Length: 350
Ligand SMILES: Nc1ncnc2c1ncn2[C@@H]1O[C@H](COP(=O)(O)OP(=O)(O)O)[C@@H](O)[C@H]1O
Ligand SMILES: [Mg+2]
View 1 (cartoon, rainbow, N blue to C red):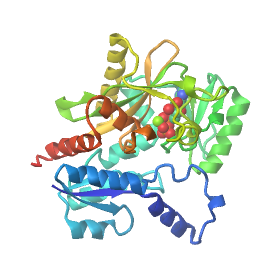
View 2: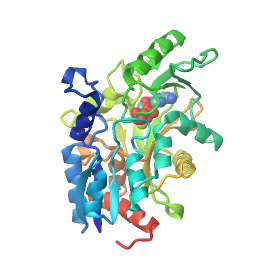
View 3: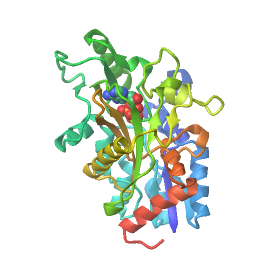
């Protein structure tokens, strides 16, 4: 199959950032977590090689202004979409939108689902409609101020439309109204978007890789997040520091356990809520779903990642590949399975 891997590289994002600013930006002016979602050259190359090893013809294309022309020139049978974009609340939808317009089959969810999942508040509203447990929350922006009376603490402050733990630092956990107010306005200012304040879920945390479509939806082995490996005074959250600073290939944190140590009943409960969530959000092909137990042990949905991180090096601790590996799929096997799910949806032969 002729595949175009469409990505947002760290270099591409920096170029776009500079062009939007209309000037060269000194490194010191770029927030540390700014490029957390950009694809590295190693990831892009690893995906290309992996798909080629399965017999596909693969070209990598940056999701920038030249994308339309590149796709027209290459005429792929399928776009393998991993592009997370950089600007705006709909940045994850640009590539699928272009594919929709030019009638090119693509992997993963459609623009609507990607937009909703990128907005944690909208996602939670939808989950609540279908009675899928998620933490109570309030949303804040300069346009509307909301009272914090009767809000239960501790809580966590998160930018509404980010991923990869962007904007989620150890100091995002707040114990009372005063701390919440300070943190909320600081984050609105820094991330230039609304923030949500969410009740802190005190139980265990899991991340659940789910893939497939229709009656072929399958949950891969669940990954447990073990906070005992974090520095002593750190809050038990998978913060930016935990993801990108304290965990390095040289000094890996033993933060994940896969398969998670769960009883059969606990595992079934988490798998069920993950599958229900996958269906409610109309996810296609694959997704990683973050789940955390509340104080009564009920699994709550934190958020969905319909463009899951897929760092190729096992030491980089990327959870979708980790779950797939535990289920017996190597990197190429995992990516090819996603291609197969997408191809089947479009009624294509591989
Ligand atoms: N309501 C919550 N209660 C407890 N921990 C939370 C809550 N929301 C987020 N966290 C912690 O913060 C981490 C990042 O939050 P998440 O919503 O998954 O954002 P991201 O899109 O950056 O991954 C989670 O993995 C979890 O450890
Ligand atoms: Mg998350």
